[in-house]
Length: 218
Image (cartoon, rainbow, N blue to C red; front, top):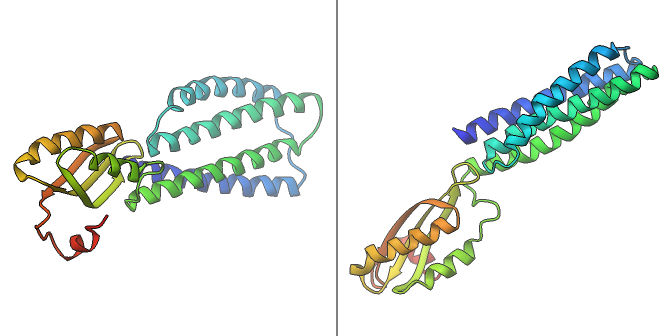
């Protein structure tokens, strides 16, 4: 549900940004309208305070949902900062084009970053290997565990961008050592951000299926 939430949030962000970009372009073409500067300054200070605090609390999140919500809050912070700067300038100069121009720049910036994060969310939903996950290093560390002679059918995907899941077939020398080896594998997996691991142990002579045989060399 975290990924679904990130997907919905990203979609709303992009649609909202496109609508604002459209309205900003229309206002620029029509010469803009003169807003009430003092009221803008008061609302901007309030918006910066509330959204700035919320963005600061959430910016360190690692899940796709937290990252997407962070961009939502960053959009608000940038928006209110632009409102404040624009209101101060409008208070002294009659630059009616400034307000839609700031809205256009901020919406474009947020839409681009929200789209990038949305792509990562879609890849996570498609069970792509997590970005930055060092699969080959993890597999080499697995082979260094005493009793493990090979690994195949190795798959890793992410639940939310921070917590990962893995499944694998381990080729071991003695099946009676399976429980001990699995415990070592799970302990190693936790260091790589893998919170749930499905492990099947087998011997060299065991045939686990046509696909397994094809991948045994890996």
